[in-house]
Image 1 (cartoon, one colour):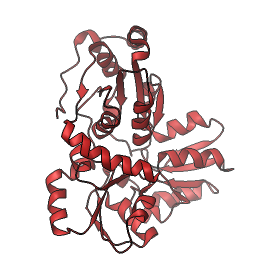
Image 2 (cartoon, one colour):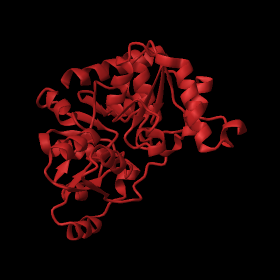
Image 3 (cartoon, rainbow, N blue to C red):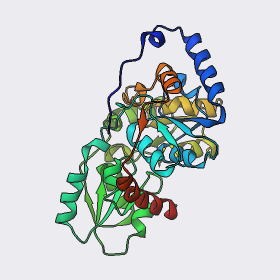
Length: 320
């Protein structure tokens, strides 16, 4: 699948911010209800201002499938997310404004890697994090999100070994909570490895009473320090329900912007300001404009792969 991008035309790159915003508005008006824009929580605020729905990768894929009128889905995220949206919304055309926006973790395992692991462990069930390519999902028994990974693993018949990937940190966290035998792929998210225990303790001293919310993709030592281990959706719910006023956020630093927007009366401090996903930040208003005006680049998953991957995704949905 194409993951390269033709440079933006000078007619767009030279535009002032106000004109970019005006042209996006005009393109959206022209397309009307035929188009929907989706944005992951980790997107920059100048991108989020243009989207119709925000969420984690799986929630956005569900949004894509639920939009009855939309023919075009502009997915402001990374490649595997746009693939998942395309699989769940086969009647729609999914556009990824920057198809080189990939996911290092997803790229740490490919179909050949997983096929080889399955040959070594023929009796094992395969659970793959939704942060994986369509080709890997097609070889998977059931996908999972960070929010339901524990429930997915618990649904596998007792005593059966489980191949889990690509994220070894999420896998170890789930294994500890379920007591299941897990054959872990040694993948990880580089952004979530930018935290330190020293920084956790420094912020604890500076902000007594602050709650530390950590994504399960973080290193085990950081997870052990957390008040709650949650995906991005869980962090939003926790912040909404908690009586705390200050939170340290152990995930991509852009999540603090989303939380500040939702809960302006509360304070959100990134565990590491440098924990930024460069791939997420490849999406820009200029690229959104180019996508809307050209209705490209399109993300297409081969039908045979999409059909097999969809089965693993639908099993995940059924578990909830």
